[in-house]
Image 1: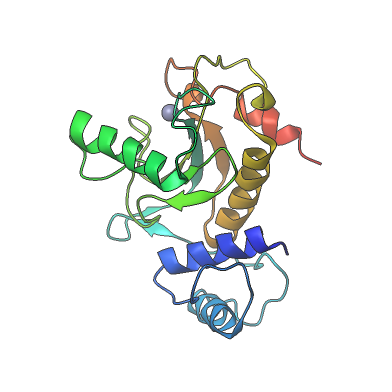
Image 2: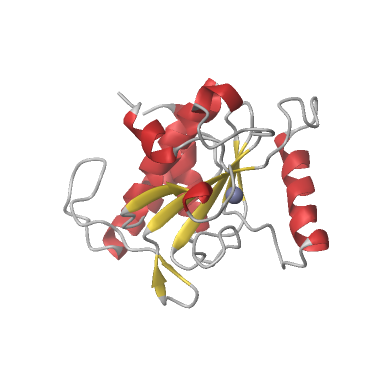
Length: 208
Ligand SMILES: [Zn+2]
């Protein structure tokens, strides 16, 4: 596994309340112990392989809604938006929009992917997000930075970077390991919006 993939697993474990140690992309003793506790908590300790045969169930909102879907979004910002800033600063700006402009208690997304493919965690996956009207329960919202002026017929590569493509695919794989997602969709499938600026189903088929 790449360092990026291990980092994503570490972030996910941390988000689920396990203690994988620092998110450094290295599969050390602490990460190993955290994976073992996660696996045994999910009754799959005896299973081998990357993806447990018995898929994990992750619930939201006081354990009422199993996570069954990932909805992909974009920030609708220009490619050079806050150029030179860290992802943390861009994340803080989006969070400010959601709290100050929309009156939400936190950023609406669970994850944000920067132009360079780095990731920041928003709401814990065990909390219901605010990212797609009428479908926030049981869904995980991932936001790609960029996408200003995009249409839903654009190709991923017209508005986003190869690093974002790689990270999003790795994240979807990692989320699939800890949830029972049955569907990966785009915001534009549920609202008259271009967001995320491509057809998610078509992009998924581009893989391999
Ligand atoms: Zn959206």
